[in-house]
Amino acid sequence: MSDAPRLNHQVCFALYSASKAATAVYRPVLDSLGLTYPQYLVMLVLWEEEPRTVRELGAALGLDSGTLSPLLKRLEALGLVERRRSLEDERRVEIHLSDAGRALSEGASAVPKRLADAAGLTPDELSQLHGTLLRLTAALQDADKH
Amino acid sequence: MSDAPRLNHQVCFALYSASKAATAVYRPVLDSLGLTYPQYLVMLVLWEEEPRTVRELGAALGLDSGTLSPLLKRLEALGLVERRRSLEDERRVEIHLSDAGRALSEGASAVPKRLADAAGLTPDELSQLHGTLLRLTAALQDADKH
DNA sequence: GGCGATTAGGTTGTGCACAATTTAATTGTG
DNA sequence: CACAATTAAATTGTGCACAACCTAATCGCC
Image 1 (cartoon, rainbow over the protein chains, first blue to last red):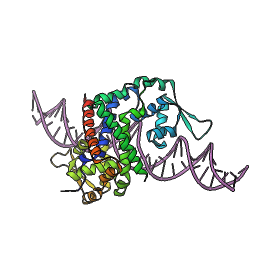
Image 2: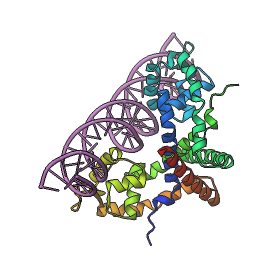
Image 3: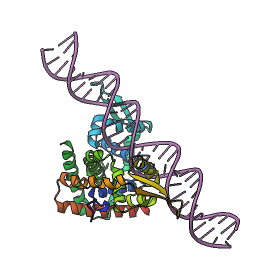
Image 4: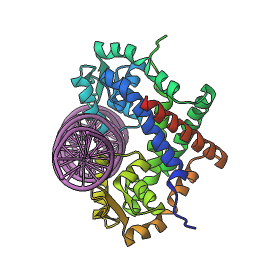
């Protein structure tokens, strides 16, 4: 009997697959909004509070400037956000919502329900899964630092 | 009160973050093996059984030829696999392990333990999480078809 | 005020992920 | 047998994700 790890016994693969399946379920709705999944995440953060600096967006989403800079340029090209140099600290770039960006949140309010409907889990299970994932992510990120 | 969905209430974001955190934890070990995470997944499938066609690998991992073709070329360039046209059906390309590819499974056997150690969850919780993720993924993939 | 260290953001390069298209081999049906 | 339909891979194009590096602005400390 081999000690080679088996694909279907690995939690990491289950996470990877579930994450891909979730974004696939969102894709049709997000397509109709003209957003990719990571762009949708950025908009989510901005709908909660704006303006935000690139750094703040990165901290909220766990993304660095190498990912965010081009993504934000695309959102700006779509007319959803505006990038403005901060006046107090000219190193910072503030990301502001445009009117169109603000308006898009209406169409997006139905997005999360889509996953809940497709999940095939009870609200209780979904809530417990959510809690476990948050704890897992925190522990993994913590372990990654040491 | 706004009806805009909030980032930190979304299971999809929890999945996305947990998946990224898990691959980040694996990265140092995989770096020392010279593999990326998706390359490691392909090797996992081959360690279970080989040869496999590109199609079979794609079915096991949920990846299409657009992702696998260049990935497999890189694994071949690393000397870990060989690509051979099938003799029975020349549309197929069989992926065989090289001796080096087979040998690599020794070094990889410690990889999964890394996540279990860093997870901060009891074996019971981890096992339950695994089961929930499998059910979730199946339900989402099923919903995606209709 | 001067100057090294830090911080914010951008750029470049590599490697997925996935849609859409292309090419070649095979299968099914008249 | 002919030939349309299907299937297997590869290719192309767009967009993340992340490491490594770069520039400019700010801060600390003397």
